[in-house]
Image (cartoon, rainbow, N blue to C red; front, side, top):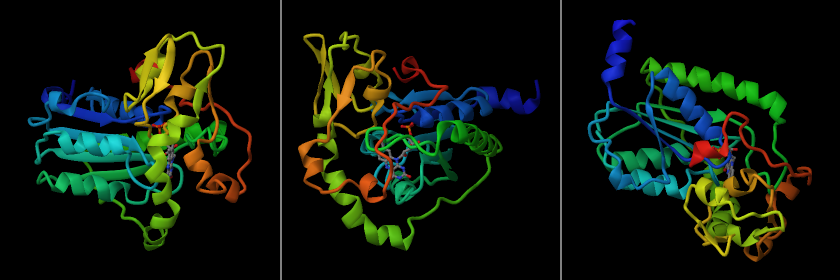
Length: 281
Ligand SMILES: Cc1cc2nc3c(=O)[nH]c(=O)nc-3n(C[C@H](O)[C@H](O)[C@H](O)COP(=O)(O)O)c2cc1C
């Protein structure tokens, strides 16, 4: 074992992750391995019970949602106590527009006297499988994702410094009209979910939900309107029993962006092929 490995073993390394369809957890796992076993902590947990005050390496890994980081990730980061002198990294998985994701994270860290040492956005398969089919096609995209996750992980293991990307002026100017209306009704997304006769009440949906939005009542899931629209409940249901119709609040917003962009109507339940439901519990 090299001296670097020995030093690595005695360092406290934590990675906090949010993941709906597994892409971000896959990235977090690859980074954890490169860091010789950083502890992975789901942001479903209570941040006040996580001790990052003496951590040497602290990572945040999550998807981009509506050109930002998910609300739960923001809440968690805000409440978490950290060592501001740690090597802090942020990896966001996304499809095309990262928007203000890194700016939001940097702002929260700045309020704690900390800053991002390294940031990178990693392109992945789209997880809005309810709105449109996973794209780019999994077969093509998954090997590319693996490659860029490994590159990112090796840069982080080497403690590389990398400035975070800012929101482009065009995205900034489109945000109020294109994203804000969706963000305002996001919590109601779960009004579109319902179960069919295949539901056994097994509770997998409740356990994979990153916002703890689901409770099981009379052996059926009930969504409690703290939804981020991550689709974990749909794609990890072992019986494929969770279905979706567009909720009223979204219908009221007019033609969905997916249709405006001419994306095909065909749906598929995508989740990262390396991540199983149990990994998210
Ligand atoms: C509700 C929702 C909103 C999303 N918004 C964006 C976005 O604004 N920009 C983007 O590039 N990708 C967006 N995506 C795609 C995800 O960021 C991407 O597929 C990510 O890898 C999913 O990570 P996960 O598998 O860990 O949940 C969105 C996905 C969902 C479900």
